[in-house]
Image (tube, rainbow, N blue to C red; front, side, top):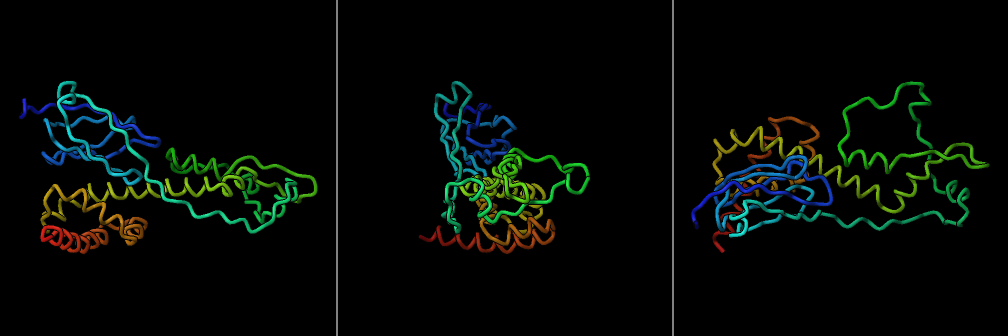
Length: 248
């Protein structure tokens, strides 16, 4: 029973999107990702350590116990990684009079598709977080007596409350996670063939790279050659850190 390997079917539960969460069996070096419902399946045996990771969530490790082996099922709850928002500073004095306060807010009316006489958005479909951000930073325009232009009340309130900034951060993390997955998928084989790294450290290495501000720039450029050169440089630093840890 101690050595029995079973296919564990699991469910990742979180407050936000659970698609593409990385599930790594550190003991057997097997790897999978969750589907859009947070479901996954991975071979495991008693006392194996499973690591669950995603850019927008705190890293979580779970040790496979006997109950999991018997039921061949598990549920894992992830905690969202939320950075503290900057303090909201309102530079204008609010009087309580809605029309006066909106006029005093300094928010300018945006040009929309109706002004230009062209169809609305027809680009790439938005993700769930992108749609939430769009909804928070857009909305109905209201006309108030004495104002020369319409004012987007929804946009003002969400920005003052900090909700827009929080959603912008979520979209940023989601975009970063996609870039990280692409780099891992496209460049792992060529990188580790020329510069070997134990499989148990590879997941940690890619998150080590993602913490570098240069990684964001390279994601924007979308150049695999430059990304590979960056990963090679970071691998030298990562191995040095591993060496220092082993010597302590």
